[in-house]
Length: 310
Image 1 (cartoon, rainbow, N blue to C red):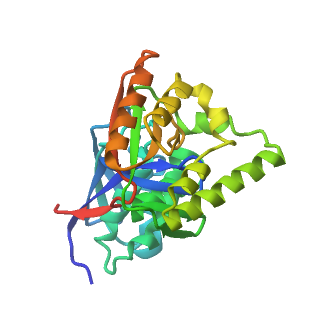
Image 2 (image 1 turned 90 degrees about the vertical axis):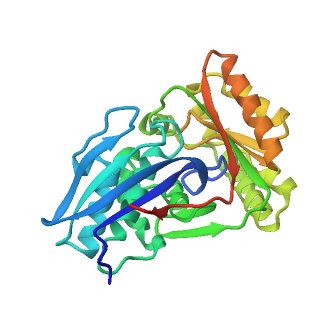
Image 3 (image 1 turned 180 degrees about the vertical axis):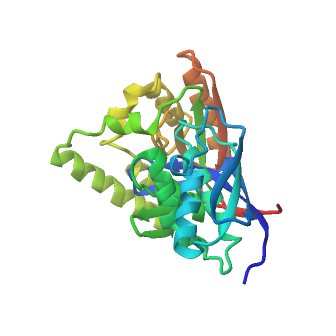
């Protein structure tokens, strides 16, 4: 039984959708992290006492904050008489397609979970982090929170998380142009239905991609890492996207697409050296349209949320 008074957790950034798996696939990305400190207090309920490092104003009202809502959901289910104060330290930019809102929910849920009389295994926090993510995304989508919980490439259904095998030397290049693109805005362009032929093409690509990951077959991964549904509709929201994607492919990437709701762009690469070249090439592509950006590389099979000394 836990007697911990104070706990801290951090959650990584993430690449949502991974191009071919809209609202279904995501992978953690070891670069910027969000941290949350959770502290027991004497009265029941959840409070957000401070938010540090956010690049835009964030609400402290529990129902309007992803971290607060995730912990509220957890306590309602597991410890309704417990009181917890949350202090958030933002390291992941918001409205960037890097899972910034989701990471706060995941880190908060993990820190609060450590204070419970009987902490849950991390995968069982999933439904509570979905409650948090819905505050920002407007939908209970698990591609970001699921991959941030488990790390690596994750298949996230409404009620299940499965970490998937990927080759050890598979790396991701992630480039974030310095502009904001809200998830709700990015989802609004997806309202119209798609032709059946496009859906079949996407399903085919998803099957190739998943089989390639399981077999460590880079040719299948490259053949499957394409998005004929979402990318064409979201690309016009990202200045220079076509140029940036082509730069990644020319640098040797297996494939490239929009990270989450954008505007960040990711590329999967065989080996760290290729990933570094792809990241630099993508950054140059954004520079050509006048957009400064940040860039990172990391293994796809990275770490998820973790508890840290408080």
